[in-house]
Image 1 (cartoon, rainbow, N blue to C red):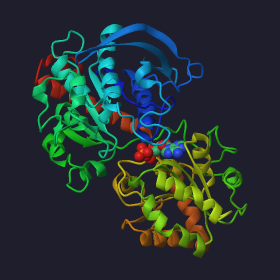
Image 2: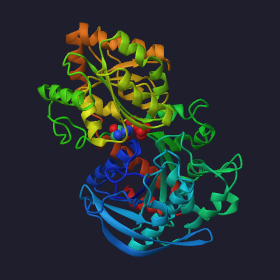
Image 3: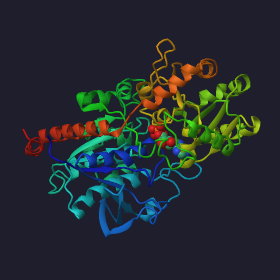
Length: 505
Ligand code: ADP
């Protein structure tokens, strides 16, 4: 049995404080399960001005903290609260960087120009904080490019630090397409030495690439499903990082995300109008009625509803859906309940569909957590035609809600959904392969055929899906093993007593 670890998780997102997608859900739930395993885990995020202090019991912790960024000495304050009342969360307040309407971009979906500075600062401030609060982490867990500079900081700027000199690092890649590539001018702000601005570390075609430097320096790197770990090692799926991930060898692995069933369970969900369970689905019908009403869909109990909740970005396959959705609506007895925001072209297209197909397509353009829960509960199917998907959480939530996923067989989607077999009655959803409108059309036709003409099969599907359990308990235990391997790797370059302290051999 290993000793408890001191773990610091640093991230630009953490549910329920700040979230745009799956990374927020992961950082908002994994630490709770690590804590339950007995580890001292703490989180650092920015104090965005849109976070409600009162609602989240946020209190001042440190009035003033100096953070040296290159030649510039910045000054911030630190606040604190607790996640689920058990995990300490530190919020870095720096008005110039975090008093904005969004996390990464403005209301027009334009990325903030100074994002590399905003998140390099977060990374350095998180390390500085450890000294201030006298917390000696065994491992620091960085997430995506925003905090990927941390492993380099530990090995270069903090290598002789009394607090962080032996700390190991883990980098989780939630989506390899987002690498933090910016003008090399931003590299100076990090304060890292010039010798690290080389093509195997931070440099990439003359620019700085934060993820690449993180991959190089992290003691362990992981991504959020086994399938995506394999895909990202290939030319097609690696977005230029495949070579560097292959160099990591066994130090790059996949760990499937879990679902937080204290938030996403129809039996207890407080955000839906009626609760239900596999043995009594009456509440699901009430949710469907409420969903149809809220999105202006015709109140037809027997017409299946296909739900979609998505960031509106190319990755999610929504352009493919746009090729066929109007034919589907024209030829099939089905409704769509769509929620999403992002790409202006997609927002305009999907946002205009309810007028053209009144009562058959409902769409809310924006971010709305409560509506997301209602779509999960009130839909009969959930569509994810993603071009690639590192893990995907909505298909996992959907299964719990008895909402049958229709997915493209890629990455985490392929790993978590089993194609329904009409001969054996096994499976949890419907899968298709080709990333085109025809394939989406055909799979929806097959799904609706099962819904209308093979009712016992559809009932079986719902029961199979609702039985699935992707709890964080297993994944959190895998993360602990990942941290131990990072500590082991770190000890090879320094002092191996740290590892021996943790492994009671
Ligand atoms: P990604 O991280 O690529 O966005 P995931 O499937 O891993 O995709 O996670 C998406 C998470 O974000 C889910 O919890 C989903 O419900 C939520 N989400 C995405 N878009 C919206 C939206 N417009 N409104 C509310 N929740 C959203």
